[in-house]
Length: 202
Image (cartoon, rainbow, N blue to C red):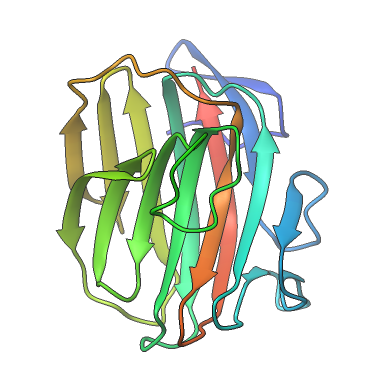
């Protein structure tokens, strides 16, 4: 595991250098990242979390710009407010357009979605689902980790590897350099909290 450092810092663990691109606990208003939303209910609150959209048929993205390449590690703690929302919350990278939903096509790169309506965790590229696995919903903070190492993408949920995918189409042409966390609500709205967002690369 990398040592937490300031954004853009280089830290060393076991003799290997690791660059920390994002390290936001969300305990205070995050000084880095950009919030994009079509609803007024998104933003940091005094509870210490970044609240992502709660309105029906709305979307929010908290994102960064930069090439995280095909070798990186991301982790984030995420929480839903209720378990009956028709929602999704996702980590995306390699995009030129901010994804509003996991099924978006056009200028969309990779995306790992926790589908809170379909009750599964999914790996997508450009609107095509590459892999998925079911999970059990709760209203706790759960940890999502995404690790890409060239053609291999691993997704961990609460410490357990749930997707271990070898991409036969690697290397893909990534549309852009946008990456971050997004969420969307369907006809039944939900709230999404995130904290401890960490993105590193070797």
